[in-house]
Image (cartoon, rainbow, N blue to C red; front, top):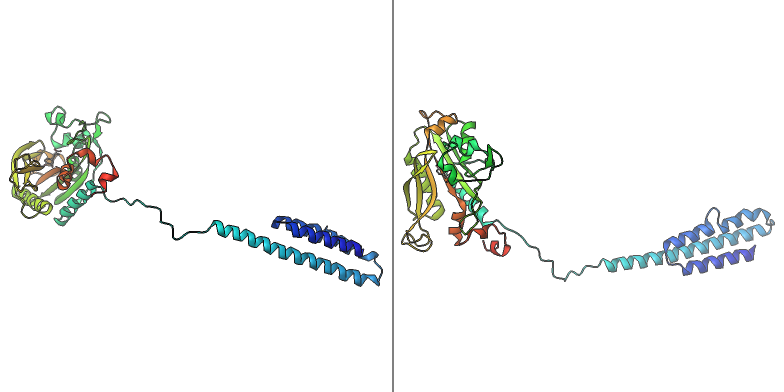
Length: 339
Ligand code: DAH
């Protein structure tokens, strides 16, 4: 029995010393020390050992168990250390390596212009409202005094979703929605995207941006319109800018006008930007037509108002000296980065 124990010990220790994984060590532990293990089997056989021999053999079994356990622990912690060393090596971070380059975007020049205009109008007491881009013919044309066969509809050919639904051609549609839903005093601007079936070129795009303005209250006159828009122009282009109103026609305003500002590039002398005229057209405006007020539920005998609408792309092009509108939509970061 003693030789058997000696053999078990030697076999176990030599096995342990050649193993490289924790799992293999666990198998060895089960093989020798487990419930059905070889050493356990010997303990079970102790009843056949003579009384004098029993303490000696018992002591030997304990020694062998201890030796095996000690070897398992030692080799086990060695393996664990090696595994951890490999892991640490693989996870090493070189803090001196240059960081990955991160591209940070910024506001698009169009949005910079829109935000600036919003700020100006908020400062003048206007509220910002929005309307849908997919719009009913009613709000885009009919309620703005542009009936089905009106020639003004031709100038604003657009994308039709159905017979009565289209992509709005002007933010003027929002005027009607606001008037339907509220009573004066009204003082709003409505910035947003509009659409027309235009060919793409340096000055045209099928999708562009406008800001609409609408002011309605008692005793509003053309003087209020001129005053408000002159203040706006000075806020946008500086205190020296001059404004000029030219008579025009829009179906939803009467009288109607277009406003020009003195060219910011040449100061009014005439240059390439203003095509030698010294003036740049910036917006359409007028006193809201009584028919439009009435149609939207506002009594024209009590209230009057003015409205205006302007394209935003041109303001951005002029401000940044960009000579082709397509650049605004190509989203080439090399271009956009500059603003
Ligand atoms: N909606 C017009 C356009 O797109 C611009 C305009 C003109 C808006 C006169 C107005 C206005 O509110 O009163 O050409």
